[in-house]
Length: 164
Image (cartoon, rainbow, N blue to C red; front, side):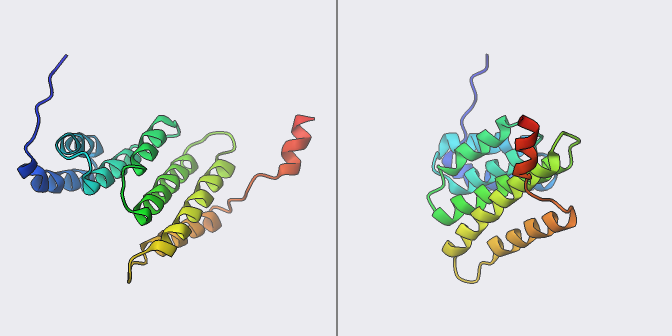
């Protein structure tokens, strides 16, 4: 196939700016590619890990391989707050993606993903840096989505009766 070319460590700050710009331009595949090059040169670059994680979640559909790829990146983040916060983002974005799809039980599934996100945001909130309310803002967003769409957990009694 192709032998990928390596970037220099000196070019990483500018490459990070480009990756962020491509994400904002709704070009997550380009942002992801740039981050893969950065991580090849600097495997522990937290900013590149976060950008690639967000670029992956920008591409979410109802399938799970993207979710698993994004979750695998969490363990590479050194900060516990970031692991919880970006774990919440993964769950929130998957929930919103499922909510927009016409699939069976999408409202129940979306609810579960959004509640998982809220739990992770609560964990992040307890570890947040001073004057950083991002986890609270995201928690509130999930709560509003649940209320706006009248999402609820599955009724366990209904599931049991269907199985009988």
